[in-house]
Length: 360
Image (tube, rainbow, N blue to C red):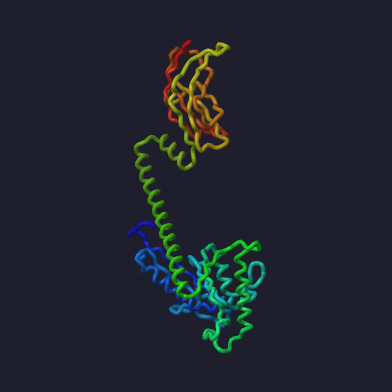
């Protein structure tokens, strides 16, 4: 976890709470966990939380008589896709199906507003966590006061059946999990697992913020260094550094040449014989590597410009035609990398050559 830093603003996490009417207590536990999280020693001063739900006791949404409840949530509240993450709590009910006006992309109706809220969060690229109470459904609990004496068992069983159909969508036909959900037995268990999960989520967001700040600081430091270096180096050197970093120029390594001989091959034409060890990294397939020899370190006039047919080699014997000249001869060698249009992409540091006639 990133160390505390006084110049970082607290991470603000917005959470959408979604569930049918039978998990009101679970939403209350979630609000309590999220309110307490910023006060824990690990996150004090480093995180703030904000929650949204249609039944928020501190800020209940207005439910217009002109539209259905789900449309009121969208009009007067915050949509799941507009929040950082969505928490969904399920037990024994699915909720009220939405009208055809809020149909899925395939034309089918949403089983409830909860399913619509999950889909809205997922389609918006936001994180969703689903918590399922695995206690027996309310209509099976003898003497339950939650549903009252006028319990419509048929309707509750139908609700439970639709919930099971919805839960089946979390698995494919082969039984493999398509999405994760967390089960809990009671509100104490929910509080424990939710507190742990939210701590992990918040910790990750703080670390992401710290990494973003670190990257920004590194870029600013690099800009300052390059600005300082630009005043001390030549324009050519600055262009080489910029191209190497920004345009992914290849890296060229050329070792010192152990010997350089002036020889006469079987046809008696003069030639230069070198022993090369070099490597070109991060090259494109179309890059070509040339060995270039000149008498001056600025390589104003090339004596040899010969293509090498490998991007790396060790102790390669290199021969090239050589003009008549005095022996011994002193000059410079470099490697030049060019693209398919023969445009220069990178050059190596030049190495000195001290060439003489071969020893019989």
